[in-house]
Length: 376
Image (tube, rainbow, N blue to C red; front, side, top):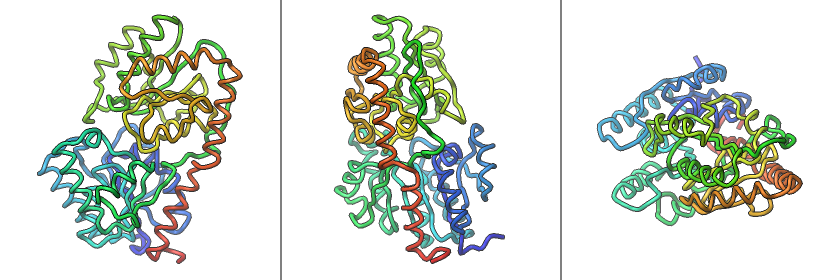
């Protein structure tokens, strides 16, 4: 039985989220003498890699989208029971419901909370009663948080200005970081221009704008390839359906590549990686593409604009604007191979200078060390 004084709980809304974004942190926690415990729902696409992490795993159920008072109360009680049983040093929350409801449970059980706001989600895209309710929940859950990490300065400023966290609680991280050894620069491909979207296939990620922009570009320049790489997530509030994706494929507009455990071969074949999202924390897809020396095309919104310097390592377009996105992709295609190579090199320099996952891991180990952790 692990020493309870070494336990650290990591909670996300799926095992996919944990293995894709937190594997480096889990390995570092184990190396530092902690006993990580993962609390997350099952995701068939990630269970093998979840087992490979070699940590204690507790499976829970969760309705990832929407507010169902009874289901959400059950989730709080589940987290509360588990935290009372586990008695961890800290509870590390990732994604919205584990942050809010796990954060409430951590407050009720006296377990220090270290939250990570990886993005504000659909609810913060426009004001309304739902946003007001979620804000109240955040304020209660985070009131006694040891630290709340944010992935871009605008999200941090919003939470501080609205009183959801205190200024002294809020720290900035470079996203979830990128493994610079695993994601190495690679020569640019030859052949037809290929644009690649990486991420969950969601409306709020700008997938529909991407497809419409692809139609516009292909009408003028046949032969350009547009690819979607990532899971269709029909349980999400802004889901794109399998049927929509199938229609786009049948139309010949996009190639749907499904989900994968390794994005590197697809990035290697891309002319540029595109993310027309409505708002982000700090997207891992752009960081990994930048690490492999690819130009980036993204929307001029929080979380994306931090990673793109227009004309230097990529291009920005307007959110929810297919014409603006199509124009950016045409501009990228019309640039010379040498210019695209220079953009890719600038992308790699950017991640080397400030976005290594080692920075993220160091911040977590420092926060845990202040709580009286192993080796302190």
